[in-house]
Image: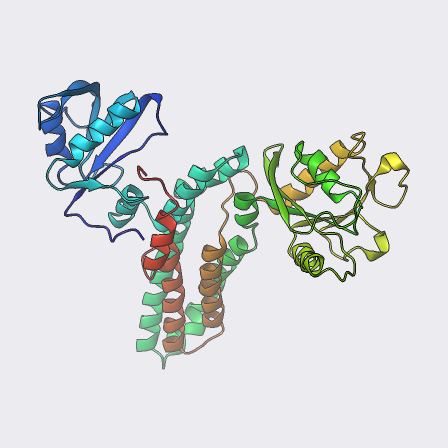
Length: 428
């Protein structure tokens, strides 16, 4: 668990990738960052100017490295604190020696995962939505994931929330006025507040109805289901161009859920191989079949390799006539994992359907937590829009404002912060 942010100590960590590398970045942040840099480098450069310095261990006078040193003064830094970054040679021994020399300076300790970003949040440099976007950016593996994460990390949701919060504050102030003039028709909530409240609720609703971030972040979940020996595992292997699933002529070979993450045309997918659906007396196979049915129920897209009459009646279902090379002429898209027939067409169909589920380009998208809280805010506004008593309206506006504050991290999120920043590396 990450510690509470403290301004009384200074943190240090390597911020670049795993050594060896041509260059490594070591970062310090906190009140002792500048004094530690002066002790190692013999003086500090002016703020935001990169200079070459010879670093010496103050404990023994041993030369550590020649590197670029960049100084940032609070509050104009990534964390809002005094920061110094060292761009040194990227060998493991050099990095370790530099970090150890810095840790020997008074008031400096090793950073916890995500602590630099957590300090930026505590000091108002970013809000929680930007931190969540940054976490997604660090984990992005496809172009679409990167673009969406950049939008979130760049503060698009923060700006939207700030605008909505300002309007809520204005509405709350007007509700207070209406309370004072409750006996006058011209001061009633119904007359002056309801249209503005309903308009704001509609704006929140438009974002709530947009595609969520989870399918893009985690991958479109494509479950391959059907009876035993229908060609499910072979199709998984053909689409992923790997031997992830075991293929034999024995019915019931696959008994557990096998997940294969892939990207097609920049779209992230998770292909899910499942046990063949049939009645069985084998205890292990029964468990696998139950899991297969559960996977089919929660699939974003379902590839059905069986009789069309038995296919789940869902918009997400795509019927596949597998083993086309063996003369399968049943309804559905003919596909052969052996000859490759229909694989390109199936991939195009999956990509086309996936795009309908994903955020468009750099459009703003919410995660599950943000969606739930924004839903609470809209519900409060919808209730407020139907009320005539300004006192009750004011209370619903307060509830809506609190929900927006929780999205941005202004209230009630300490447990969430521990989990979120635990996903970050030490130097972030």
